[in-house]
Image (cartoon, rainbow, N blue to C red; front, side):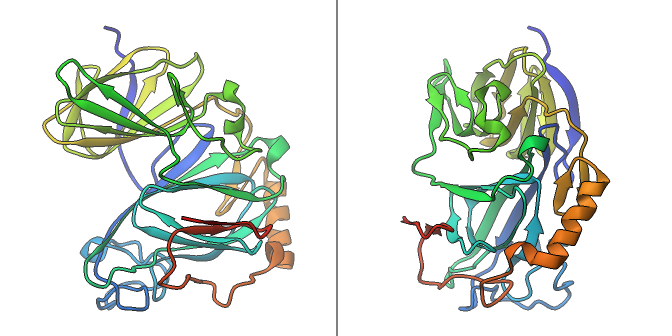
Length: 337
């Protein structure tokens, strides 16, 4: 068997990715019980409130003051794919769109020419802990699409396709196909202006769960496609016969068979794959363009227009604690789950 592994390296924050992706921010927070105002029922002393990334007691407030999360901030020139594996996210944006999603839901947002949004993590459970497991993947846009109209779509957990494999010993592998396809399992449509919207770009975003001792050979992709695996939960497994511990990224040659053989604990991986865009990348914080002049233009436009302003009463806006999962789009269309 040929070895498909190109590189193995420890994960850091944020996770390093390959073109067409920019990075992946992984959040795993064991939040305590809620305090009735959607914040933690715990003291915030000893935290750098407003910039708390320290993970004290197993969780962070991030840029939140009372509710953890990320109050209003701008984006331009790329997309965010937010996979809320556990926990909830309250979305609000400068277009007047909003939503609450989580526990397997995915939000796909095209920032395009510019949008502000807030992503808060409401701690609704006042009787038990509020764990959060969330990936935010930054997917670049090609130059021709960097200034498209902003757009967001919800991929609800009950609609996202799942691929299941049973090995010769009866052990299960489950793949949630957020983008791309495995055999006849085809993802929901990505955002219309996304690099992922063209199937020739072979963009795939999967979360893979292997039962103890499960084995699975990953399907092949075309030459020139970047493919990386992020081992974020479990203990250890073998990748093409090489033992890999949790907390590592494995970059592989997608044209060669990659054999996954799990250890004695359930393991979880995120897979990111796609054809490189192959254009220059200029990034300054939340703006991703092709050159520094475009970055300066983005900063000036944001200072002058606030990308449409902020229509919500607070920059850390959250929704009523009695609300369930929903999405309100800028055109007034509402989805309720």
